[in-house]
Image (cartoon, rainbow, N blue to C red):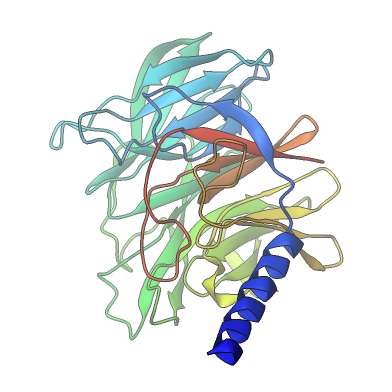
Length: 337
């Protein structure tokens, strides 16, 4: 009995030491209002404020909204995202501004949409539909007059493993119907997810300084670099980085030095990949409520002034994920850079 007790004690001590060794550098950036219970994606507005999408999956009675955090830290609702008539709701995820200050929004739902939202200051003036009928539109980047969006699942592809893809649109496109199969002229890249335990594919994406598109695969924890020609066609692909399999890389972003940052959705992790492709773990947290700035199922991240700001989605509960439940407070974290 004494031997068994000592064995258990040693086990707990080992786990305690390992927990202390995990990097916990994050701090609280913002407590969010009740109308943003599931913060998702970021972009920086022309006036320097931080815009956050809130798909609000945790509360079916709330519509998806966009919130604004001013440079002085004031939080306000920027806009309700116009709902899809058939469903009566909107669920904004990926967002991106163009150089004219127009905001493009991925409305992630059945028959999802890519929306173009035009603002005058903080007032929404006009919303157009760039494309519609997406099965799982998710991430977005704007680059050189074009929009690049990911679809995490394309079940119409009858492949051995789940297929996902990247679509490209011109900012002048309107009302393009997506079929979610190989007939889509705007589909520029597909890949399969081999991990049988997480059949979800392309999600986060970012352009590097050379104009190459880096995309992350949720299930396989793989980042791929796509080389594009002037027409936005993929002419080459190469492995950019391989993260631990159960990472579930979600949001991807970069800084001015060429460092790439990745949100590890499943394990409450933040990774940094430097210009020499060295991978380092910046932060890792056990299950927590985010109250003190702890990272709580990170969905996206962005370099904002001297901080790496992180959204805490805190919703999904599944095998292999650290998160155990959705709860208040609703928060954003940050890591000083």
